[in-house]
Image 1 (cartoon, rainbow, N blue to C red):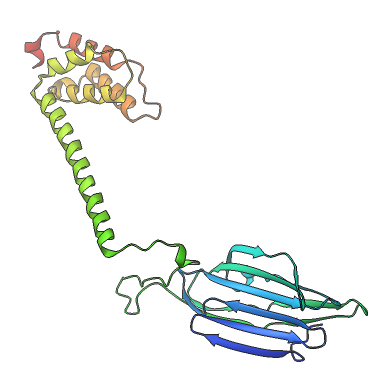
Image 2 (cartoon, rainbow, N blue to C red):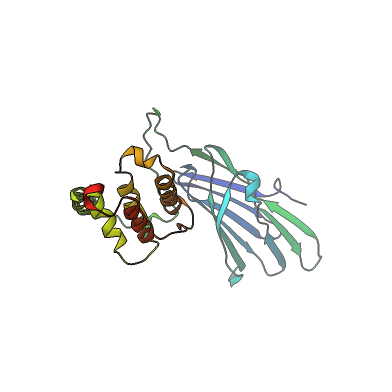
Length: 280
């Protein structure tokens, strides 16, 4: 049996959180529920701390709410073991919660079961729900800008960067990116320049004389060389088959053809008569 009406309630509201306390004078059980926020955004996490104390002649324990039923996602839970002090026993539980959507949320009542050890009579108390307002992260004018989050669970652990440091990191990252892009462009330009100056015969001969492999890059070079040939040749069955074999090797999952690019390059040279004058 829960006895909220027989308990003395005290509630204090602070700008950063709310504390609700309830006690049972007959058993001497005291319950305090504290939040570190009462207004937040969906980018924040909220910390709920429940503290329970009771005398030696009673047994008390609080229940854990099913947070999903109230729209919260439980991120972390920490239960301290029962300890003793001059007044009796003490125990606390801390919950870190995360909302999903903007709206009005509630920290539900925390229920405490109380049993008098001498009479074995069971009673109980419960805290009042705590209202939490959760806002979205879009600015009020909804101009597409994200409002700055208030902070996360423990903002003291987040290193603070000065504006100068942040600008320096951005500059270094951007400069490094430009250098990498320039090097890649330079290497590709050099490669394309060398290939462009070669005749079709030189390209095919270079592939034919290279080490045997099924590397997709070699198939791509062979494909590019064959596609430089006269369109009338490409419409024949022999050259059409070579083009298909290259495409299979380049675009299939296993990246393999029935023939190596070296063998296909040699066969192409044979079809063309193996003379530079006929191929160029």
